[in-house]
Image (cartoon, rainbow, N blue to C red; front, side, top):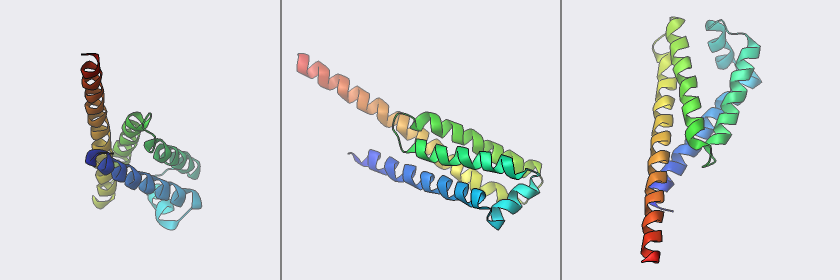
Amino acid sequence: MNTKRKILKVLEILAAVLFISHGVAKIAGLPYAVDYFAKLNVNHTAAIIISVFEILGAIGLLFKSSRFYVSIFLILMMVGAIGSSIGARMEFSNALMPAAVLVLLATIAYYDNFIAAEEEEEEIEHRNDSVA
């Protein structure tokens, strides 16, 4: 495993832990999560559905085959979280965490795609060398 792949793995695990912990906090009804959704005028059922998507997304980040698409889906969720915070006229700080997570997910999606392209190029070169 090369250095880029190791760094990507650390970022994936970090993002997965963030999404799982935040999803479980909402399902468990921890006060900060309940208060956030109350300020947004979102009912508990919708919060649970969002939590399930977060937890499933976290699991999807850990698999190479789904990582890129799950990253894009979670990025869209973070755009929604930022927009909701701004739309509800919350403090600017409420949009900072989703924005930071969005940057983390964008980094994961970019490097996953970049590393996959590099690995494919190396495989093609290896095949061409073995044929010649």
